[in-house]
Image 1 (spheres, helix red, strand yellow):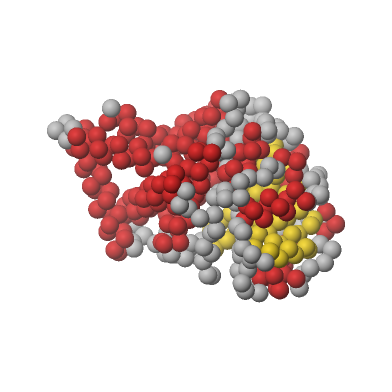
Image 2: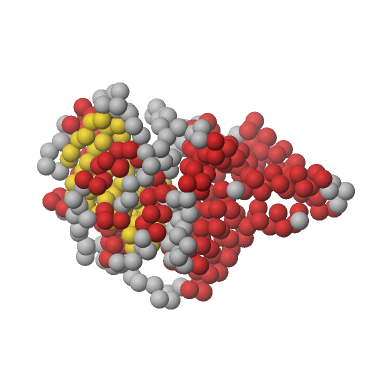
Length: 377
């Protein structure tokens, strides 16, 4: 029993990446449709930016949007100020015109409530959702929309890189995202990713389905709705953007808690699950990459309890010793803030497990607010 639990716990972090690497190599170039030329497709696009108190970033963002290598008459930029209490809307209105629309909401409602209202009103074929503090490389938009030449693709997620993260998270987050991009690319080649990067993703307007107004992580629920309609969600590594990383451990912890709470919320409501008709390939990705990660703190707790109850066995003592060593190394990292991977890897992993565990509790009990507490930058 203990060994089985340990294997289930390790599977999404160690075994699945290795299995995925083998599967992708075996299927390489087998029956995959080309992404198409980025120059061959220029559909009408609405780039929607939901902003909360982004006075410091919104001007740079709109300059960045106008500098995108995309036909000006094919791109509509929509800025939604979600009850901002600073000069976000005022600054955005300086750019207002035929290409830029500014919607000022007097009361803060949350991102998904604004998307539910604004996106169905867009006439453009492709919707691109972006955070206000994410800057796109000039060719990013073309790279995103080029993937829609494949009629089976309904949503495309970009590659957002973090800059200026707090030193305590700089190397661990770099390693984490490198692994995530590999998993996303692998899932895309097999069939589909499960979610998207909320800072930069595109979807066909006709596939958008409104979510409950208290949805915590729309970049899981909206892409899953696309999959429920028989279309794929894929990663496009050439569509690159940048945003500032977490400025503190507290900020990163709160972000991870919110994501886990949103996953729990979606599982309970049923809108984060694949449809029963989904392919076995997608169920494989969903269970391996997401579901087992989301419940890993529960599995971890079961391992500790099981090992404690049978501590007279050698396997249990090995598990408890490993846990003790990991906690010790993580504690040393918390004190010393070292760049040594021997300390940083256990710390970041246990840090994430604690956040996911708390997020599951908040998601199940409904105690996570849909209103994100924005960090000052």
